[in-house]
Image (cartoon, rainbow, N blue to C red):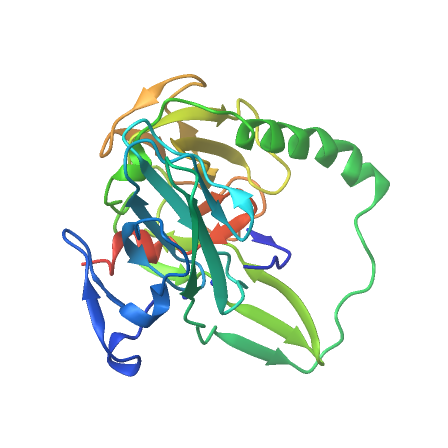
Length: 292
């Protein structure tokens, strides 16, 4: 499924940026991408500092607040935190920490841009919008999706290394977009995995809580399943032939949660998996690594 563009980030090209700082248990990051201004202790972090990417880290016990570009970042009881960057993130962001003694320090984050797969199409974009009859069906669906994403759960999957929900051919990549005679269309908001047949089971990529399990197909998504992984991070699985869990269920990484299908607006059996943190749309490939 496709959604409109938003504004927010990319993977660090370490070889291109100079001196590296090693973070225990995580990848290498450029020292200059996290230069301090202030007296608070610099947080350790790891992840994918790139458009569609994410980072997570820790701050010392007693830290009063962490902000990303002025917006509060939730802190776990152990000082752990998670932030992510939209497909269209700017090339820089600012992480601000208020220490236990009230001192404040800020660090600029250098966010690497990415080259998205763009297809220029020499036809005009269709100007007509959705009909009122369609929107009468669609508005309640969007309200359910928004309500699900607003839920706060005790899920801890955001701490885990994600796994692929199933193995197959990647038929649609995150961030790809068509340009119609200079006018951008919506970009692809997730990754499509094709298995060639309906009914193939797929699993939870990380621990979570089921926040939406459609009992009847949505107009676009078909049988829609959504899982909250905690800290505002959630997964959506579209076009399912069957949803095997119910709302409120706690699921474990690797647990079978549904079956691939082609319900909703789909031309063949496949699983569309998308990830979102707040309003930022994220690239699942940056959570899992390449499919083996």
